[in-house]
Each structure stands twice: as C-alpha cells, then as structure tokens.
Image (cartoon, rainbow, N blue to C red; front, side):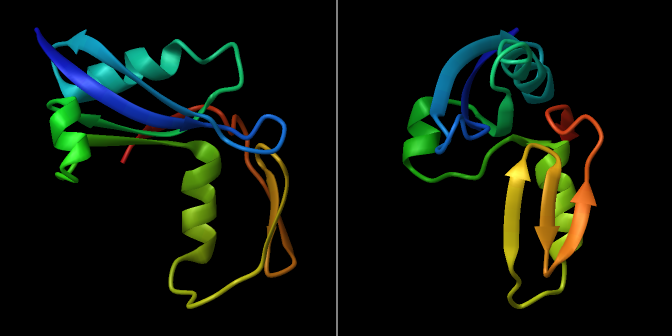
Length: 114
C-alpha cells in the first residue's frame, strides 16, 4: 500500500465549487481516487479529482498519476471536442446546454478514471 495525495473539486453548491484534498492509502492511484470520491458520494459530489505521489508533486505542477472525472464533465468534454469556442449554460448536475443544445446526463455525479 502507498499513500497518495488527492486534489479535487466538488460540484458547485450552490454557486461555487469547493477545493478538497486529502491523503489516501491505497494499492494504486485509481483505487485512491475511487476511495476519495466515495467519501463525497452522499453529499455534494466530486466533479473532478487527480492523484499525485505527494502534495509536493501537486504544488510543483507535476503530472498527476491518475485523473477521475464525473459523468457530467465527461459529457461536457465530449460535447465540446473540436470546438474552438462554445456557449455553456448549466442548469444543475447532468443538465446543461452547449451552443443551445440540451444535454442530459444519467448519474452525473458518478464517473470514472480517464
């Protein structure tokens, strides 16, 4: 088991996201991220999180070992791939518009390692 530093953001509640971080002991960075995200599952939820070897690596802007994104963010990135610019209007988790096109995401607060 190794210890990983996790840095993430929550879904906006009600207006801004909260930065959250912590140390998680796990067998690998993916497991650490899943454990971290699980701690917020019944609350506001994690929007995105990254795992680092240490807090120093995060503060020195080193590449994360693994990244977890919510289904909401995955859908947003999919809808905006290849667009140089776009309009975004968010109505809540899993409910947003890109360039006037309504998008609904099932289980927006669930997610996966990307």
